[in-house]
Structures are given as C-alpha cells and as structure tokens.
Length: 83
Image 1 (cartoon, rainbow, N blue to C red):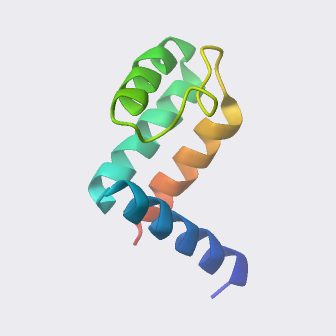
Image 2: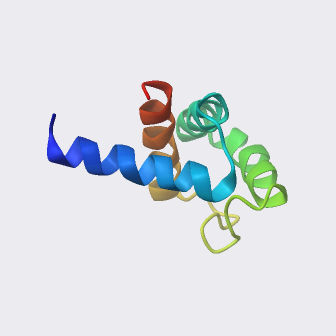
C-alpha cells in the first residue's frame, strides 16, 4: 500500500477517535463537505453542525468558505467510507 495513503488513513482514524466519530458519521461529514464545495449555500449549515458538535473551531471553519478544510473533510470522509 502507498505510504501516503497509509498516513492519510491513520490521520483519519486519529481524527475520528479524537471526536468519537464512527466511519458512517465521518463518511457523512465528508459527503456534506463535498456538497458544500460544489454548492456554497450548504457551507453555513455544515459549519453550524460541526461547530455545535465541537468537531471543528471557528478558526478552522470561519464564516467565509474554507475550501482547504472542506477538501480535508471530504478526503477523510472518503477514507473512512473505505475503512
């Protein structure tokens, strides 16, 4: 297996453990992030949910769309779905 893929999967597992997320929940977050990348109007809803669940902070998800964080969440969701 590709070492970078292994590293990404390990980081995803660590993130999930840190916030008590199961693979299905992480995959759902990833899907919502992917949708928010394509439709900015969904960003506020995703942001509200992640902030209220204390999964991410306002610094990580500012009011303006943060594509880097969305891309990371989408990737982790895909990795979790395949875990």
